[in-house]
Length: 231
Figure 1 (cartoon, one colour):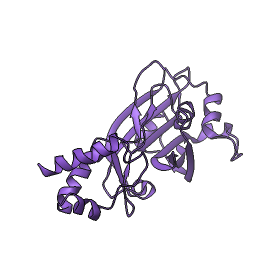
Figure 2: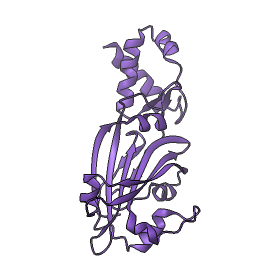
Figure 3: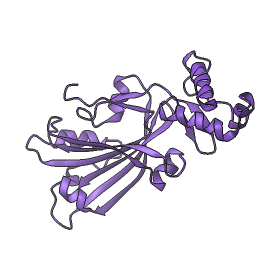
């Protein structure tokens, strides 16, 4: 099939370094002319490369070569910035919003809250090596936020871990794949309905009391999950 021939040709150029990580590929029109094919056939080849994590697409910008995946162990780590630091990757976290919310049924269950409890929601956009790769949601029981500093320069996660004696062996994770919401599509510059890797983490203290629900929705080609009890 022609699309497989095209896929293999582009993949070979990426693997041999003719296209570097983060580099933009030629436009679809140029590539279609280069391979003497239709845009439909070309897109089939590009979509196969995207599924394998070789390239990714940004709306209104085009196709780019994926960088090396960040290795993230959600059983041992709940801070992507820390994982980036250990792997010498550049990480920037951009705050998108912060709200007081009435806890949903799921939040009440996983955080072991009473009915009609409130949580503080923090939504952030995670950039790795200059690329937008994930939207992060954090939900903190309202009664626990009284222990946190209101200094914006003080990292909230660090305060939580220090205040509640975080025990990585007690926290729970759930991993799946879901379609991006409108907020996530806009923040990550993705086409509507793009699929994202979803990581839910519930952080507990040594008494198994949950104090944080964290959800990370990320591009599958940007993060390599290593799920293990050992660091």
